[in-house]
Length: 402
Image (cartoon, rainbow, N blue to C red):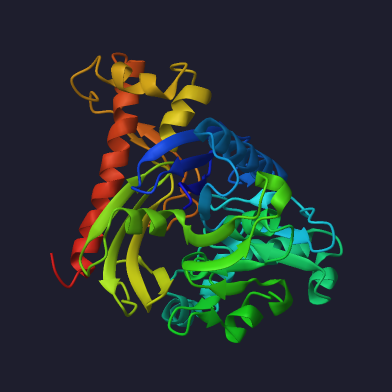
């Protein structure tokens, strides 16, 4: 009987792999950061080939450390940064451009133009989402319009689109499977949240040809097997869910009214609302949580998305050089009893829920001659709590129960 399950956790700033035993205990982990590309203000890109290479390296390293041999791994599960958009050539698997990351704001004007046409209410009713550059649809449209020849190639069926789960599974299976699950598909602005199928009306609105889209699957079903040369034998890929939904499932929020907040690059609060989507009156998102294949069932969520949470610590480290390691932030912040009335709003890539202001930028206020780097570090950490409190207040207003 197989000893292990291999989890691939492809995040915004690093790729990670974890080997679990049959009782769900962590046996080994491997993690590797990769480049963040900021080619223009408000633009955030990744090299999709680097994402794949770091993820594969972590997976192989974790299995080596666990001493796994043939037949030891029952299955692979994939979780991923969600709305980040990759388009690649089906023939050779090479991306046509850098991946556009979920934080990227380059399509803010396009979203504003669509809002001015009065289509947002219909889009929200169909998808549960708002018109914001956060989501994949306008990123796909931008790539097809700005990479020479891409739109013609896409219409011919030569190109494939995917969020990061789709990109990883394509590479894991040697291009045999072009799939996504409902949780990732529901973040594209192209999925009908009620039927869980791609919407022809939305494809037309965003100028996205159906030929580029992956097949939508359940979050828990076998979607394919890895090519043997990657791990020495084919391994079934049996789970796939976007990072926040996967965390909600992993923290056992199975019943209506249960909620969790995950703090990583951003902060994402999700609440289980049951087997039907629930519209928000407080500028939160309705989204698919997960779909199980056996027995067949779907759970839906309300979500509040904060774009910059833990990433503010990375900025203090890399942008301001206040410390060498992210772990050092707490010791620095504890040098003072409070922030000294300094407030930091980490709107580096706009603000998410409940404000949805793509044009916002980062701000520090309340500086005096007595302000030290310790006050700024403390204000940065407090900004994570303040943003989470904003989302929790909105969610409590939407909730049908405490």
